[in-house]
Image 1 (tube, helix red, strand yellow):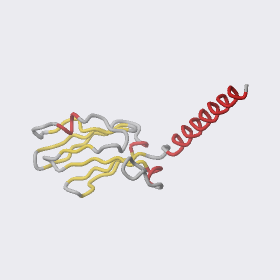
Image 2 (spheres, rainbow, N blue to C red):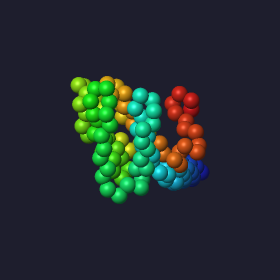
Image 3 (cartoon, one colour):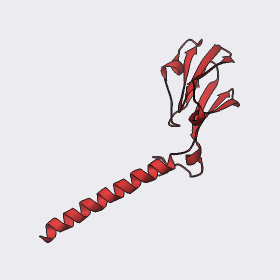
Image 4 (cartoon, rainbow, N blue to C red):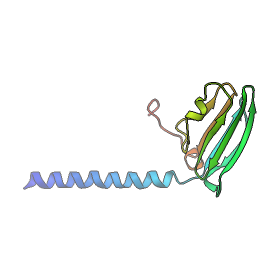
Length: 128
């Protein structure tokens, strides 16, 4: 009898901890997502993706031609590029800051930041 109640209590505690962690992660990630577009290391435009109500499309001139950038509510992508390898186009839509969109021939980088997460330092696999 005691062995069974120990396991029930342990499973309930783990489930409660998982629920609290899920709620904390939802609250922590509830900030605005800002897309910063850099060319040759200089920020040329910032877009608040969380406040967009319609699609925004614009082009950026670079050494290897133009990049067409498309932004919607919560996400951004390079929809067309004149560079030879098309890696930036193949990266597709980005909605988090896990990895930037990069076009090396045009020296273009699009980085995403979550304003709620910027107040607290991130812990990753290297530092955590």
